[in-house]
Amino acid sequence: MKDLEFLPEKYLRAQTHLRLRSVRVWLFVVMALVMVCWTLYARSGQARLAAQIAATENSLAGIEVGLRRIADQNGELQKFRSQRLLVEELKCGEPRTLLVREIASRLPDQIFLSRLELVIEKRDLPAAAPGGKAGTKPAGIEMTDRLRIEGFAADDLALARFLQGLSDSGVFQKGELAFSKDAQIDDRNVRTFAATFNVAHLDQKKLAAGKPQGGQL
Image 1 (cartoon, one colour):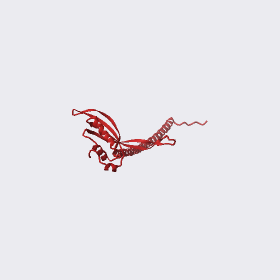
Image 2 (cartoon, one colour):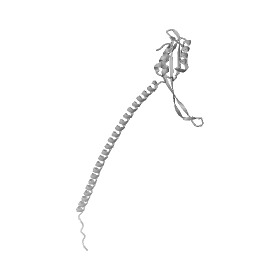
Image 3 (cartoon, rainbow, N blue to C red):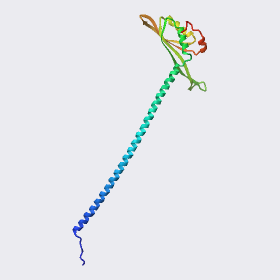
């Protein structure tokens, strides 16, 4: 029988420790590689995030510039609309100087005007549909120049004569007395009134050539 040779226990322990040390070294190396990879990935993620933040800031800056342009354009549009509205308000079927001259020529001493306003009233004209029924879309816009006057009169008779004179002038029509009531000016009893008239679209040459009654402005 052949004798078995056993390795010394000390040698076996040394080999075990060596293997454990090798395993630990490899584990440390793997952990170090993982940490390095994670660091690189985190840095690249931060770089991407920073790039995305920069791109977002640039987009926001572009949007802000666009909003400012839109606000400026809205401001210009509002100015244009205000100017167009002013032009429309200044438009009238007859020159305003002729209207004022006609009113002044018929203004007696017993009447004092405190307000004279000329406005444009717009109304949609219904379109005729087949069968004689009204259409859904308007055929056009009817514009009426309407005059409103306010003031004071010495009495009802002077007021009636003044309003009748304007109605008979041919320049103003469809006169309506809005109100007439008692008032006092410097302890004197008078009548305060407001009236409206439509401005007739007359031949301006004939109106300019006509002689106003009661004097000129």
